[in-house]
Length: 440
Image (cartoon, rainbow, N blue to C red):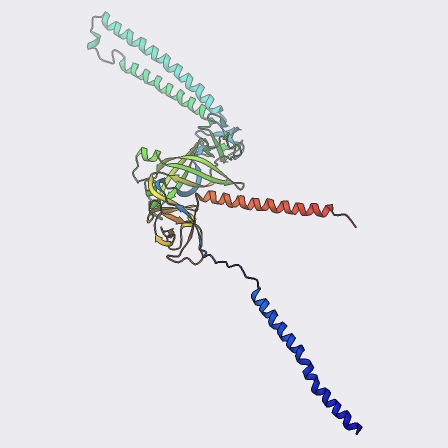
């Protein structure tokens, strides 16, 4: 009986347990629904931002057609305008080496270069003087005899004009005069030979190489030295026919055309660049048969004189390699920076709708910095000078005017410098803060 009662009690407790849990479940369900509604109605609202369409940046300049003298570039080696081989004009032993002591030595016009033994020539000149004196004495005697013969004919009543030349001693007089002239010529030759024993400089110059030395015997015509003038140097500049056309030079030029050509020579010396102003002397009379090039000859006067404005500029020495920039006739063209030129001889333009347009141009000339356009661009066209990723015909652009490439570079350099200065200031502040911390 007791067991049955306990079993009935357990069953009644298990039946009452779910009834007790229903209120708890209901409360939890109501709370969950309330929280869900609260989260839905009071959720934060994000600000609505409309994305702005971005276009590629296109830096451009305004095409300006104006008269420009297109520069032409050439190169060549410096040579002395006057280069000679100095030879002996008389024979003898060298007794003195004056300005020809060393290779590379300088000398002035009229300076003594070397001396040759003049003993034989002094004696020859003395002998020539004696012969001149004897010839003069003989001429005086013959003139006296001729005068006496004419007087004798008059005394005997004969007309001297009807007498023979022999009776008037005219052949003897002519012979005496000729002997005097020959003696005087021999004396002049002796004086010249005497002068030629002292070899003097024909111009201001420099010694390239000496071929003799003191004590050496030389004959007439022996090579003494190679020398050149330092008064003027020249540079032969090869140019194609196309480049001569840019300068306005023809194979037959007038003096006015030659004078209008401006030449600037540039040379590097000890990692520095120096410039010299040159003048066009002439164009050579024929084309080079090997490459069909025309050679222009440029001259620079006084290449060894110091320039007060450029005190460290070296002399323009023969053998130096120089580059030349020539400018001549002006033409109406558009000058663009080299960055504006694209593959295939094209440029990129910005039209009135700020869209990219590709255009083919006719290039007259170009160098490292500029492109000279003859046709294909009009006055006022907007020419893009920066690079654009994946450029497409008609694509929309964001134009930005650049006044000049130089201004653009300067602005970028200033921005970089300001950034560097700001970074240095920040680093210095950090160092100061570290130094001001108390040591533990």
